[in-house]
Length: 129
Image (cartoon, rainbow, N blue to C red; front, side):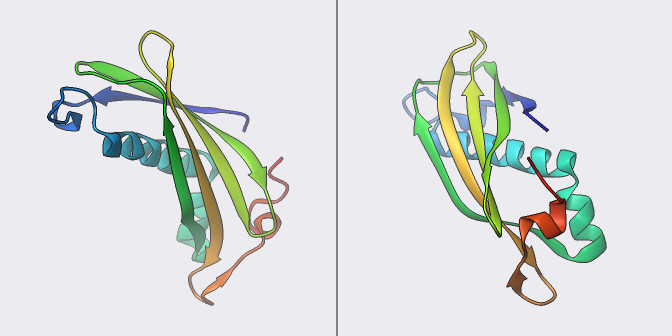
C-alpha cells in the first residue's frame, strides 16, 4: 500500500479556549488514521487470529497551521520505513484548502501478546515494501 487516506470532521469539542483546534486533537486525528491504516493492511485481522499485533512505540506531530471549526481534515498515511521489529508511518494532515497543517510520525512495534516478545515485521507482514 502506498498511501491511505482518511477524511475526518472537525468537531466543536476539538476546539480550545483560543478558538482553534487543540493540539491533542491532532494526535486524535493521527490515531484514527493509524488504526484505519492498520485495519486496511490487515494488522487487526492478524491480531485477531494470531495474537500478534501492533504497539505504538513513539508518536510525534509537527504543527504547521491552525485548524478551525467547522471543517474537515484529511489524514494521508504512508509507510515511511521498516526495520527488523518495527515500522514507521508518516502522516500528512491536510485542511480543506489543501494546505498541510501538520506532519506526524509513528513508530510501531509488532508484538506477540502470547509470548510477550517483539516479532520481525517480515514474519508478520511478509515483505511490506
